[in-house]
Image (cartoon, rainbow, N blue to C red):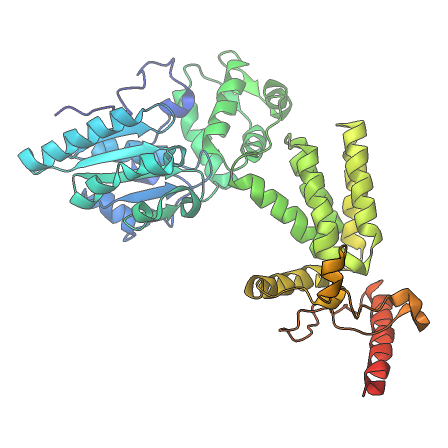
Length: 440
């Protein structure tokens, strides 16, 4: 029974294959780190044990076992198994495979398991190509993605798939994987437990990265060598922070930075800033977010926050990295320790809601300009009161559309400078109330 586009057939069987490939688990019990997903009685384990599959998507960070699970299914299923890479496969090849699967179902009554690695790389129209074949039962779709399928997989396809979430591997899980993989290294070496722990920590929960590091370390030693933590660090002397500037982790880290600032925790905020900068994030991207935080989370509780943020933007642009890292740290500390208020954002969102509902209302004629004689004759600006001509530079008049009630969108908090703003508003409100009493 032939297997098309086989994952296994595409990997050389020699020791020249990467260690991560040679060390693939041959038993379910050897797949570490996804115990809940593969526990006895779980949906996925039942599918594998019964060789009876419905479509599913494996979602998780790199190196957590998505391809390993697919490889295990391929080597143990009695079904036809085909694999595609969304990076390498053209849509014409996808359609050809789908038609073969349809013919096989009609002629032989046999379904085809189709594994699509990095399914999020297919655009929406390309994903549509799978839909009729999944619906007809010609194929069982097994997808793998590092991105949130809620955003990257079309809803019609997603609704027909289980979504199994894989978690980053723990230090102990990765050490177990590396210990088992040592048997696949063609020469006998001894690596200390401290060195294995260090390699596991630097992998960021990514089993493949850990095995790649292990292979690098193993190459640095001769048969019979003992490798301690110092030798291991020297062998892999490279940056190993886990970060994908275009993926979900990109948004997770910027979210952690903003929430730490909002929560007035400068220590955590500095940590997340360092994580992003040392992973190569664009400093201007972070700075733009900090400018937004200055208005969204600090606002008028400290009007200097925006001034500081814009100054930081100019300094980052002027200095560049790495010199600008202290500039950004200074701003992060300032924002995290500033009094907090989201009243500016709330005011805008409430006004936006009204604006969308009442966009048909005209500006009151009294506060319109009258640049022509005709407009003046029509009543434009007729009863406008120029505030500076009156006592206290104030004379009440309506500024909302005539069809609307006057609204109160901005309500200052009791923190920082907003306490003073509240005093100003109270003063204007008292003048307004006094003048309304005098009106006939």
